[in-house]
Image (cartoon, rainbow, N blue to C red; front, side):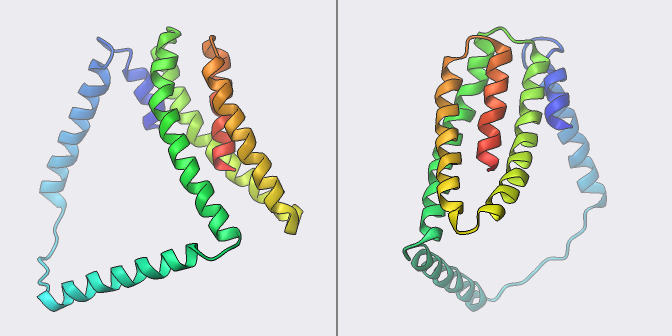
Length: 178
């Protein structure tokens, strides 16, 4: 709802006046509601308990890194997750200025944000079904999906029409979910 309504609010006033005004109003309402209704007891922590918590964190971090360093699928999935994170950063930095340069209507930005979430969910659901059917051959399928993700990112940069840009963007997010 936030993504869709944000696209509609962007059309109010100058480019960001609607969004910023609505955000400021919602934060003010949440702040007042929090002041009026949120109650929490103060907690006292002994210094040794805090150290124990930090030592537990360090131990968990070392254990997790050791697990990731083992050869096999887990390492490959960690590399995929890292690469996807960098790619996602590039997409999220790129898509709004690119779509803006196509002079797309403001409401389309909300639809793209909303659709991106939806296609990630659909890609996750779809890949679960596909990968479960492939069993031990799931790793090559995962490589194909990640390759399609890369191809989609390249195709995204070639789009000159807002319609095709949004279609490729949704496909890229389908592969991100996969």
